[in-house]
Length: 479
Ligand code: P53
Image (cartoon, rainbow, N blue to C red):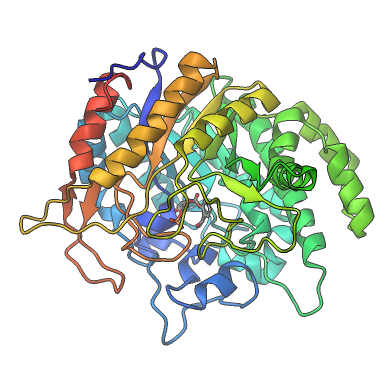
């Protein structure tokens, strides 16, 4: 048995979910409609999440998986007990904005929504689990999209500020780790998710995306400011969909392309961690005729209120090429890249690269020198329960083991400062990219299929006991 060096004392092991992918109960207790509710499963999904096709309400002929999802809204006590049994030190979850402000622009919050999360956080603390809360995980109230155009509108700053103020005050003492926007760089790839952007024919899409990005970045700075004012114990992080770009060959133009692709993603974190717009971004806007409405006070907020830590998701590395003849892409994902011939892939074509995880951890650490937090990592796979309903998910264990091993190297051999690790979809939930239930990530199997059939019964998979041991040994026994 290989015995690894343990992770630093107090390392936050856990799992992660997002409200719209697990809660269901889309209209319970006064909850309002959000963008994430009206993205159906099936072929139109991609056009909708990328803002090319409008879907502002439920329509005949579609199935909307987030409506019920795995109904964690009504199962959270049972689910958190299972997380507790695995020994979770932290549980990353997100707030559904429309449970707190159903339309988004009200003055007063919805008490039932606030109470729901209060109960949930208290349940976590019963098991010694520290909540890690994403304030918005791809969600935006539908009313704010219809009336204001989502994050393209500067008024969003005020609505988001109200939400944050309410959350920080209400959950003071219950929550101290906060993330402002999930995968903030996904605005470039899936602008309806998160930013609530839809585009008109002939509109300058880049201009709108970067203006919305500016609003989110300032909103994130305002949130950081308020969080620290309300409770100096609060720690606020940004969140990046990470994954280092490799040059396709050592041809300098491929290396240059990789650097540029990395910058496109790091742009957001450069602002949130360093407090100003990088020169390469200003030059790009100049070149492309992008003119942003940026106020003097925005720049001050960005400068004064940088994040305390940097969190990110890692599923895979990516490849860039400066040669237009190199075209072969990784399979069907909005965030696809050139295919890496040295790597295997998941059933969904996501390439598997554990060493790329160590590389990514080191790159981000080298760039920012702020504590890191891995808040998503995992394998989406088809699970087939045996006649007793048991899933022997050795493939998932293998994926996680390899990644924890390289994460251990990053921490213990390279000296990367890392606060914690939460695996994505610690309980099976709806896929963000495809809307499927079939693409499972969990340690806990949930009986529900792509069409919404199933008893919702929870069953521990083989990986459940494996992860429990990993946590119990602080990552030193991962066999
Ligand atoms: P699914 C694309 C690329 C990287 C991360 O994704 C992504 C996506 C969106 O598909 O999203 C994050 O469910 C996201 C989660 C999501 C998870 O990755 O498509 O923060 O909400 O579920 C996995 O397999």
